[in-house]
Image (tube, rainbow, N blue to C red):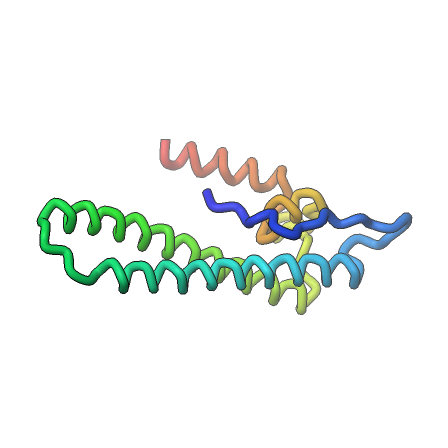
Amino acid sequence: MSTHSQTAFTPYQSADNEEYMSDRQLEHFRKMLLDWKTELITEAERVKDYINEETGAMADINDRATQEEEFALVLRTRDRERKLIRKIEKSIVEIDTGDYGYCETCGVEIGLRRLEARPTATQCIDCKTLSEIKEKQNHG
C-alpha cells in the first residue's frame, strides 16, 4: 500500500473554535494533495526514463528475464500510482465543490487526523470498516 511521503509535511494546527473544513483547512489539504500528485508524477517520469535506459542492449537471456520481471513490478506500481493520482484529483474537485472531508456514505465528518493520514479518504472510519468487512465476506 503506497502512502504519501512525509517530506516537508506539518500536521494541521486548528485554531480554537475553528470550523471544520474552514478555508485554512481546505487550503492545507489542497496543498498536501497537489504536492503528493507532483511527487507521484515526478517519480513516474523518473521510472519511465529508467525503463528506456535499461531497455538498451540486453544480450544475456537471464538478464532479460530478470529485467522483464523488474519491469512488470514497476508497471504494476505505476498502475497503482495512476489510480492514486485519479483519487487525488477527485479529492481536489471535492475541495472545490465543498464535499471534501465528509463521508460519502453517511455524511459525517471524516476528521482532520484521518484525512492527514489518508488525504484521499472518502469515508469515515466506521463506514470504511463496515465496507471492508462486507468485502471480506463477499470474497471469503
